[in-house]
Length: 219
Image (cartoon, rainbow, N blue to C red):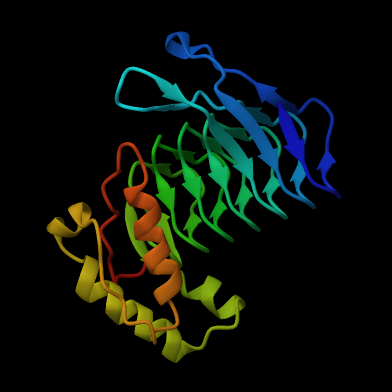
């Protein structure tokens, strides 16, 4: 089953509700599409295959697009994927991925299964993303840095960008950062809500991907 909101645009030759047969998988759940989404030609949106419950059974799941999601031509949204409001996708997304609000996944990139892409992050063209990416960052050539251009476009000041940069550099630099599963962010910080939500969503994954190590060097 498919449930969709109002004002969506579906271009010719897109497929909503295709089902994977990889390793004998079947359909467990449904597809939800919000409102005012654009699904360009030759896109595929896959039905969910469900979540294993640890007792040999499978619970129903959802493949979901939020509101105002834009899928560029030839994009693939895998089974059990969630793409949140305002995200833009022009790539191949494997199963069980979470693309958070306002994130952008550029052409010819690919996302490993169980990856979490943070709020307003940018996955650069041609990138093979195997790690979780912090909110408000850009991933290019396996290097994760602050997306200052994106922050300025969204109305954040240089001081606010510097604040987040300093926090990330202290908390997520070095080899051990890839395995960090939680962080405490003072509630007064402007980025506290989305960074905290990012780590909460990572913990909800069946298999949590390593975190992309943060670098203050420009890409």
